[in-house]
Length: 215
Image (cartoon, rainbow, N blue to C red; front, side, top):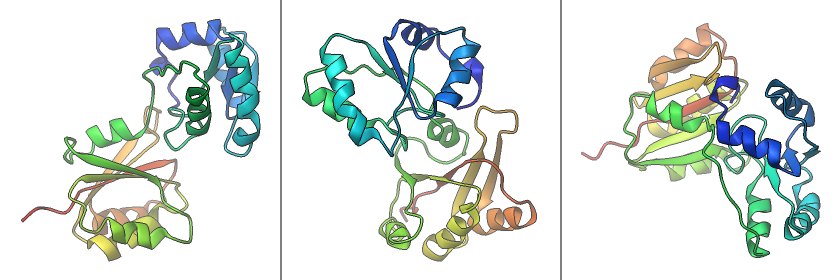
């Protein structure tokens, strides 16, 4: 997610042993590999080309090569490319192994102060069409809800949540997880909106919202 100290020994070994490393951006992942003195071939695999590259990658896997897939920040498949390739590899009879790794919503949930025993992960809402309908469908959700949002739309998201969930619903907005400027802003939806109106949001956000209380 941005902190090199979160890298595991197993992940370093896998990246060194892989015949090919797939990544969203070779420049970003190149910094990671260089930091750990890993000299391996990188290939771009992202949401804009994964449908075109997956077939060739699966053939390489079937031929006995070991291929590693990493994200720019987070775990592949969790609001990042990975699902399509994993599905195609499994369908072809290829063994798919997942390494425990960084994903922003888990630490954001744990540090939110909201119930962690039952939750639903919604990721990014549609930027335009279908955004409000997704929120309306969650109006009576009793589990803690988790969303991803950019700094440019987080206030808009909170305002929409205020309209659907009410101004007094508890929320935690966590940004820059694992980085130097990590911060969580907690309170009612109205209180957090007021905070961001005075302090413009920066960084990528995980928005954790309390579920509807069962009265």
